[in-house]
Length: 134
Image (cartoon, rainbow, N blue to C red):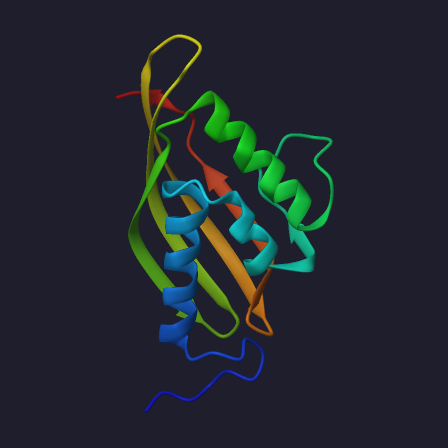
C-alpha cells in the first residue's frame, strides 16, 4: 500500500486523482466555484499565462478561468500525461476551444505543475503553447 505523503496528506495516486478531478470540474464542467474548495486561501499562481492584475488566492484563479470560459465557452482540457512526485503533480495536457469573438477553433498544449499541501492546491506553474487553429 502506498504511503500518505506528509506534505500533501495524500498518496501519490490520490494526488493524481485530485488534480484530474480538479481539471474536470474547474474547466470541463465549468464549475469554477470548485476553486474555493480545491485552492488554499494563500494559493499562488506562477503561470506564464496569467494576465496581470488578477487578485491573489482562489479569487484570481476563478476570475481567470471564468473569463476564459466566457470567451471560449466550449473550452476543454484533456490530460495526456500525469506524474506525481513529492508534493507536486505534473500534467501534460491538450486544450481545445472555439473563440466566441471570431468562431475560430483553437488548440494548444501545455504543462502544468501543481503543488499540494494539506489536501489543497497551494501553487501552480503553467507553460502553454500559443494557440493555433485546430
